[in-house]
Image (cartoon, rainbow, N blue to C red; front, top):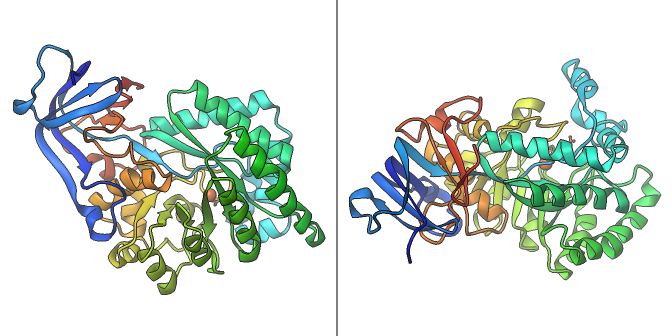
Length: 407
Ligand code: NIG
Ligand code: FE
């Protein structure tokens, strides 16, 4: 095989080691090659190694100027498709009203549902696209975007259509997830709502290829374990992967259910205890932590350290959304995971790359090795640890997606 481009003069080429998801202490195993080069053909990496061993000469060359190169970040959890804002909720929370109380009163997620469903399709597309572009400036080449503020069949389809258009028209790799977010307020309407989700929405989303996974918010103020089980069964019956928001405020059994259904990931985990940690360590389900939520809501941080010490596969996301984590920077999520969740620098990088890919069921991104897509960040300095040390701001350097420079 012959490259179309070689990337030269790389001080450190840094990538999570191994293949597939990295578990427990293996999250600290980075492959670091000094004075390295990368060869790329048609957007895929065909060779990495020390530059002196590069077997290809005379192809298009990119001089990385003595900088470190890392895999592009992957944000496996966002709610970037929303209309309106939650500034009033934020003021109420600062004045002492809890997130759950605001939601129980019909605010919070329900307020965003009202504002999103009142947003014209073109505006929802533009808002979603702008947010995905901000997440790219924060280092992400791949961004998962959930629906979940559409609520009705029509509303959810409209959100997924906006996400599909962003996927088609932006440079980012966009992964769409159908999120079944909150049940109807009137208890008597819950069963009909679940019927609609399982018998109409999931089949239509599958048929139109609008999402690859279904996510459910399992929580006291959202869906019960029994309700989530029905949704998971419908999703899996249609060949979709499953994911869940679990243990954000209370551990009500979502982790065990999700593992039983071979979920790709369970996300949040702020309220997880030893039982949930042990169950995740014994499973292939990725534990996705979201430090922006801890910062914005003042929740205890998810037990990232304990999960890794127990042997779990830990990933990391922004949870970019208007209510619990208005965080547009995957880089800052990476930096916060070290400060708030107790990850080491190397673990945080693995969580935001190879393991974030695994949380999306993807094994062709998140590492810099032959066969992978050439999604990478050429940093602006010689030491990769800058990306974890820095607190916010756009990531300095250049982002490449499939070998093409995006910024
Ligand atoms: O991941 N917890 C549920 N869903 C979102 C919050 C959405 C919102 O507050 O609008 C989350 O935190
Ligand atoms: Fe979320």
